Image (cartoon, rainbow, N blue to C red):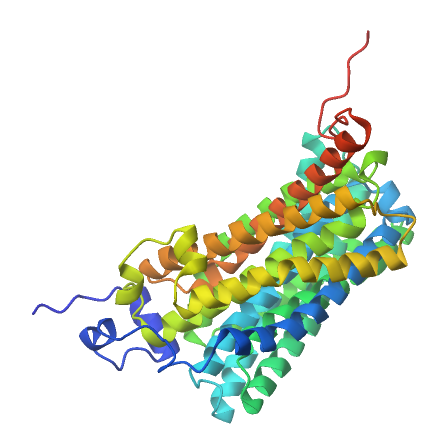
Length: 467
């Protein structure tokens, strides 16, 4: 039988994850990781995921309350583009930290970080990679926010543009350093305790990522805004981080898989940032409208829950493929049929079991987070029963769509011999931000229709012309 020639990117993944030792025929004949090959059950998955998920929800609720508070700060009221920057910058941190957590979880589950020297190499190169990504994409996120502001009719002030760019770069870099270190500690600790890092690392990344990033953005942007008359402050910050980038690249190059991400992993992150920016435009246009009272509180929760759950599922499917498949070739049990909503949620495979568990968490999770927000911000959010039902329906639709797309996207990426940890999570979390913000805006519009009988005007509608 003729042996299939592997492409270079396949060989790289084989070296990176140690999956090249088993012959293709033996791997293809492997049975799916059922009970005899995996000890995980719906109960074990749920018990490991629930507590980090609730902890993540507390962080997201805190981020929503902070955004509701920060939107009235002078820097946010004077610089409208800063609100447009919030979803892509927060989403960027979610992408970077969750892909980092997913990569490290895969490395932990395949035994790469068990050796101390190998652990140091993997950890240092990944942290350096995240720093490079944060600085570059943070600047691109600020530029995208400025361009969207211009497209929507806002003017461009050079000083405010400098403040926005410096705030975005500094916030992204500081958050990358803090959250990246935390992710390393969580994954290494989970490995030592015998807990699957896939189930706990991404929720914790989501919980603290939004809270820390939003707080840093508010503080840093306020500082730069107060000192906006200083001619050299903001350019020096951007130049300083640009000078640090080559050093981080040299550190990252000690790990071949990270080198491939440096070369070819930019498109998913940049595209996810652009998609999240559309959600930021929706958020910017709705916060000033009275019929969207409470939008700032619920937007981080809605977007964060969807991105959190789909990142868990993507990380789990990716880990199973690294353990049971060859890059470029799907295992036999995944080749039998193309994923449909029925197979994603109703089959007997372990990935369908985890999808069901994650979907079950949506309603009780959102109810818990909604209750916390209503308790702390009762005057700022709608609490009518119709709005709660619409809100829960939007959350279910968002997570259902994302979990099914995760099943499809991971297979497509794996068939191209690419790593799903790096290429799927950014797309899905960016789409989760756009879906979450859009569905939440529809909730407020539908709630206004049901309450008054008149469909409220959309904030994206053009202003009426002179009569």
